[in-house]
Image (cartoon, rainbow, N blue to C red; front, side, top):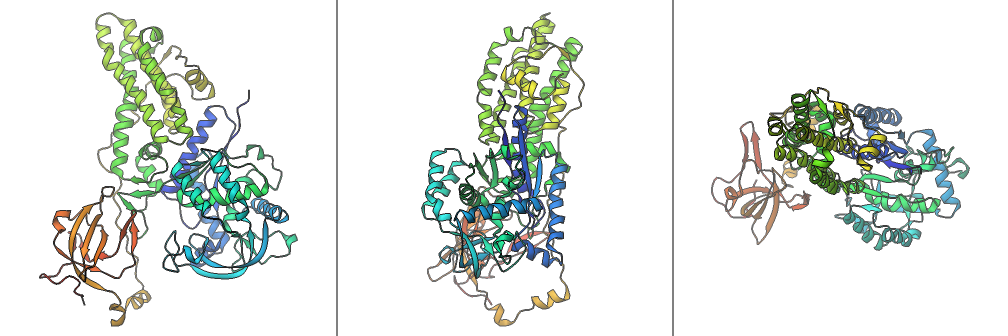
Length: 638
């Protein structure tokens, strides 16, 4: 019986900036799943690419004095080059500027229009250029700001074509309810269900205020319109398979798994299935949203100089070590924190001490006891207990991978390695050799070699090159035949002579990369002129003295404290401050500080912050700006 087809996708990455760790995380997960399904013998299609249209791209290109196409070419090339360097096993790299993609999008638009699901009208609403999203006034923060990114929106009034999203509200809810795993993680699915239950409005899907996008089909005689970037982008999942052209690859549809970041889940789990319903195409089997990455407990940003470049990390610590860390460190769907210390701990402990060292022990014992020859003879009769323990763990381990529980998948594989390492300690083959029980000693070596072989096959989608080295050392190849033989049929290795292999995971004693400091932006003479303010502008900032009533550590952060500050007139402010490295909560309680009291409140790591402390920092460290003597809370500064 022929295995079913598999279709795995990443989102197509927006070319407003270069690849970062979040892009790498999504792509590594998708690559792992594609490799896993190929290992099992499935015909697999893996898609990635870049999203290159929209007002944000047009403006980014203009700010760099570039044509949009040339700017998109440059950034798209950086994504493709990085994935090639990372040996990402994609089958197609799609670009929304591809002519075949544009034709497929135009066909989809015309199909939905002819069906009556698209109509022309006038649109008035608030548009966030950064998110490429429309909002109603009731959705805005402070009457003007985007509820997703906090940036100002722009009131737009123009002719537009609309998609009847509201028509598909009940069908969407039925899909969510009938398919338990259509959206992962399940907590995110509940958020989507609640959003849809609140009511869907028809979606404006064209713009006339800019022209960097896919035009409407020529036979509609309305070339002043370009398609909404999300309609254009989402269609890539079917245009990549030939939709609107020869459709030779459409046999891979529906998608087995769409992998996305949690910030774009709404577009993929509401707009996309509604478009597919209109086109009368099957819905994807699974849409899975992962969390974001911070660095050392702080949100990454260019201004802080703490953005993680995945190429720098892979070059410094090894690509496969980086892949392992990303998939082991954080449960899928939750936010993860990157630090060099955590990565080094994983390399030295998990990979070096447990995985690589087991191979070294097998090589050493086989050379010493039997001239490097390893046999599986007597393994089944002498080690029933260990083999059964392995089977219990491996029985359901692959279900974890299919549900994207990559951290638990790897935890289970490492539990199997613990059985192998424990068997050596328990059975002491060196004692058996000393007591002339050579067959029993060789059976121990054969046992752990077979356990390592099975783990190596199952870890190969995550660490393909490392797994290939170990498999070659153990005398077999990693392919579908080996998967069937050792994983499905549970057969043992044929007798072989082990090969010498250098240590795979040399110990790392200290951080390889320097922790970056923010790089100040060079000031031109024009910048300096712009930085001069009037006395009236200065007094627009409200600076006050306050007393710290309470201070607490934010456990998930290495830098942040949460403070409760009395600023007089029976007012208290909650302030999140990045001073944990310099002050303890005990240092601050009942002391006075100076704060900016009229800052717009923001959320930092999900915690409301209603002001900012005044500090000074140099090479010697950070110091709070404080009043020389005790002053009344709320006393203005200036």
